Length: 112
Image 1 (spheres, rainbow, N blue to C red):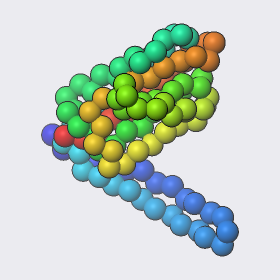
Image 2: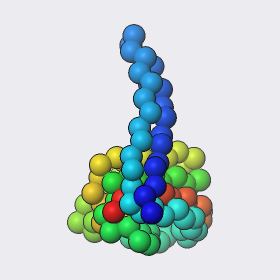
Image 3: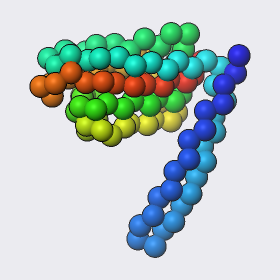
Image 4: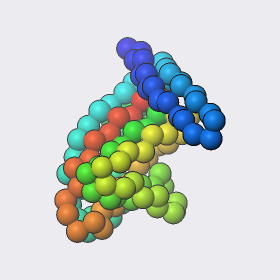
């Protein structure tokens, strides 16, 4: 069953005011929540029925590190912030937590 994922945002600054609504039709999607204990390295997120992610959203209440492959350099996601990728073609997501506290992570993956 196809899904429509819509994300709206407004960007203002330097005389620029851009409002966008991004809507992508995805064949499959998965939403999940997980606890990521401190000290955990390269914990994978289940993609469920999604083979390749076009949209990837991750949020956490603690700073965590995100990678799409074990060979990639980790990118931090700050506490109480989120990361949103469009057109990513990700086939895996690895999360690490060195914050000193358990991280409560929410995610949404849309793709085929």
